[in-house]
Length: 332
Ligand SMILES: Nc1ncnc2c1ncn2[C@@H]1O[C@H](COP(=O)(O)OP(=O)(O)OP(=O)(O)O)[C@@H](O)[C@H]1O
Ligand SMILES: [Mg+2]
Image 1: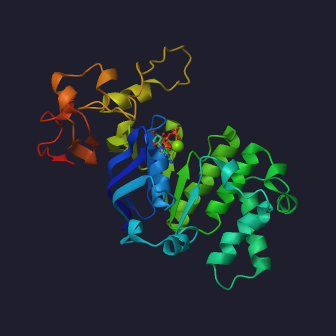
Image 2: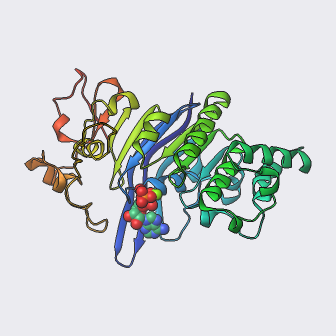
Image 3: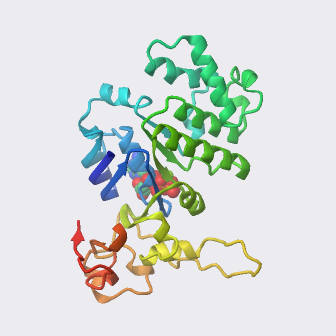
């Protein structure tokens, strides 16, 4: 069953210097209890996409189009009050920047209790406190009874990140958006948190949209991978195929740039060149200036997402007509 269906989501920021298209016709479908990982270069529109789902992008200079259907309701059509009701109850988010998302004036315990008391009617303060302390334990905070009463400034960066995770997980929402959830944590805590998310996803059918620079985390956690570049999806694939056989030249570059643990020292290949200026996107393919396979048509034609076999899609003319399926057709 589909929980989240995003169609042609486009997000533009207007400023005096011009218009930045941060997200360009993004479509995705997330099943109940399933997980999608979004990877891609810094500035490719990953966080903006998640903020749009959370309904946290309402600036006068922001233009959003397309649709974000959550349980068949288009979140983009909801009022601020309706969005607030969904946040924390049905959809929760672990933010990329925990420092700016915790309230410095309230104890960590109070901040974990708050969503329980708001969204779970009939739960007493005492019960909420117990659940909050259990949650602190589950995210690996030592002496949780004592830490419950502390303020964010009394905690280390990694602990604050785990408080954020506890707040996001405590209500057992249907959808968890996790934006770089474990980047700030050391590997043992990271493994513990990923385990916890995995269990919640399996046990209570929580769906996860996971944004991460860490391809290893995505490989471990997600059934499907979306690769973004300059606001566009350039590749979409079930996870098991993309690591074995990346299709898009950008995805190939991304995978070549991961250090592998092996006895021999390998040379890592960086992707040459830079991301084009957001205010000055080239015509045609956005990746052309960095692509060793670029052809003439890449300069003037914008590649659509070409459907491939195994439910894969790739935005690259190399796959136009030479796709891996008899039934090749382009979407978008
Ligand atoms: N409020 C805003 N106003 C104007 N431009 C914005 C705003 N928020 C984001 N952008 C621009 O939108 C683009 C996408 O930003 P986003 O934060 O989604 O990137 P990201 O993929 O999450 O990157 P990172 O991996 O560094 O977190 C960038 O060009 C960014 O500068
Ligand atoms: Mg981001």
